[in-house]
Length: 204
Image (tube, rainbow, N blue to C red):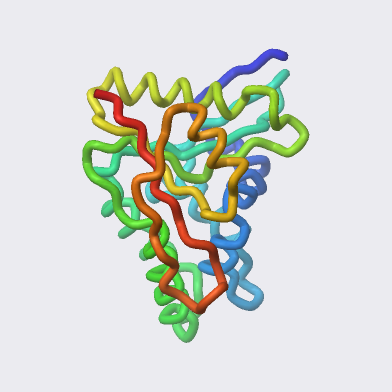
C-alpha cells in the first residue's frame, strides 16, 4: 500500500465532501439540511472558501495509490472563534433569510456537544477514512502525523470530539492514547443526536 498524506487542495472537493459527510452525517444533516438546501451543497461551498472550519486550507488528506481515501481538519483551539465566525457568514450567504434563525439554533445545539476548546489544544474534526480502506492503518497514520506536529509546535494537548454512540472510533482514539475528559450533553430535541465525548491526549 502506497500511503501519502498531504495538505488538501481546492481540486479535492469532489472526493472531500463525501468523506467529510461520512465523519458525522447525523450531526451535519441536523445542522445544515434545510429543504432543497442540502448538507453536501453547504459543506462544498464552505470547503471551497479560503476561511472557516470546513475550508480546504485546514484539511489534510490521505492518498492510497493516488486515490484520496481519508480526510481530517486540524487547527489550533486559538482559531476556533475565528473559524466559527466565518461559518456564520457562510450561513447568512447560503440560506434564505426565513431559514437562518432555525439554522443558527441548531448550530447552537451542535456546539453543546462540540464546544470550544482551549488555545493550547491542536484539534481534529471532519475525520474519516473511506469504508473500502478502513482497518489498514490509514487513520492511525494521519493521527500519528498530527500528534507529532502538535508536539513539535508546543501544544499541550491533542484533542477531538467523538459521538458517544461511536465505540469503534473511540477505541481507535484510545489506542492512540486519548482519554475521555468530559461527556457533553446534547441540548437539542431529546434523542435527536448522541452526546459528545471530548477526548484529549496530553503532550507535555
